[in-house]
Amino acid sequence: MLSDTPSFPLRLFAACLLLLAATAPVHAAPTQAPPTLRLYAIDCGHLAFKDMGLFSDTGEYDGKPGEMAVPCFLIRHPKGDLIWDTGLGDGLASQPDTIYKPLGITATVRTTLVAQLAELGLAPQDIDYLALSHLHADHAGNANLFTRAIWLLSRRELAWATTEPSPPGVAPALFSGYRQARVTWLDLDHDVFGDGSVRILRAPGHTAGHAVLMLQLAHAGTVILSGDLFHTRENRRDRRVPPVNDSRAETLASFDRIETLLANRHARLVIQHAPEDFAALPAFPAYLD
Ligand SMILES: [Zn+2]
Image (cartoon, rainbow, N blue to C red; front, top):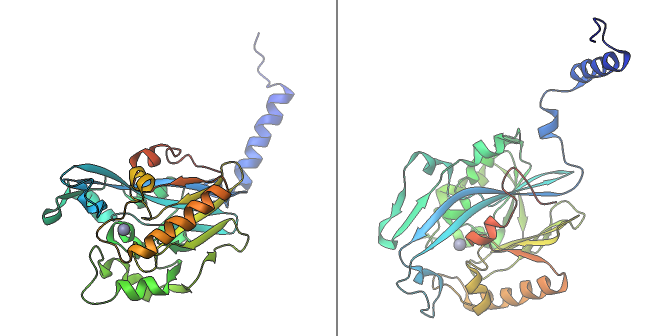
């Protein structure tokens, strides 16, 4: 039989809820710094190629079609938030497909980076640090959203990317925001939060100042985000180098460095453009930690 008066445990529970509601700051849960490092993989577009010959200078892919993922990554550390690579650009989301005709490339953005950050209660101005593996257009598309962040920028990469005429695949207007932002200039490897858990590692060759990101996660262990050191799993296996590449010798030396690090640390490599590597990561807003 039901009583009109709530039982003591029920009243205590209701009182606790009221107290929580009164003291909880608005949006506290989503924007609070996480207790430990987290890696979120975000869908920042898709590329379809009529001819994957763009990805090996020794002819294995000539005339063959292929597809690539274009991810962005949010790294949440107790001391701040870092965006690693910014995808094709949210502006493409309002266009059905963008076709770069001479190259036979179709670029698609289904959902914007801004909308996905909002799922976590974040806006671009909340992000503390921006780092780009390199300045090709499919990695720098949304960079100018982050002018409130500190840009961790390779001096050598920027010098290379702002030469005239622009190197292939570079659109300087996409990353002009560095002029308004605070910049930390990088010449060597860089420990983002000073505790060794998030490190930008030089891996030049694809472009002059290309870098990868190495994370030390509590449960997932060491994870390396490739940038464009490799574009496909096959390219990694067979040490293939794209024809559009700043230095073949530096690319091969960077393969050696990162492969040795992966082996020494029993690390997981995420080849950013490999659709199977993107699919193997937790689906946003789930994360690796
Ligand atoms: Zn690239």
